[in-house]
Image (cartoon, rainbow, N blue to C red; front, side, top):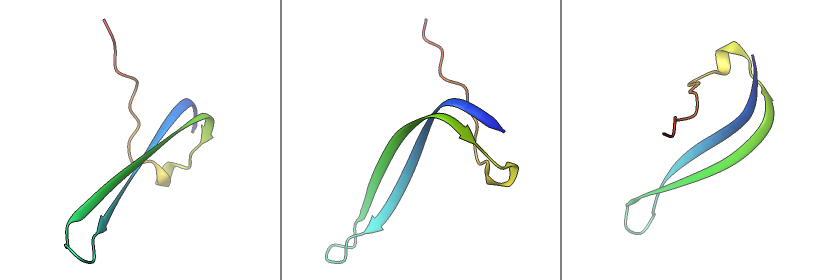
Length: 51
């Protein structure tokens, strides 16, 4: 599958060693073209419509 104008969002959850609280970090990147294998696809979503 070939996708264009892709926004990849990766979420990391870490546990603080001192407080044992969850720390959630999110990173985003934009890719002009992305080649994806079928077994690696988790979610494909069109952009949200704006009125």
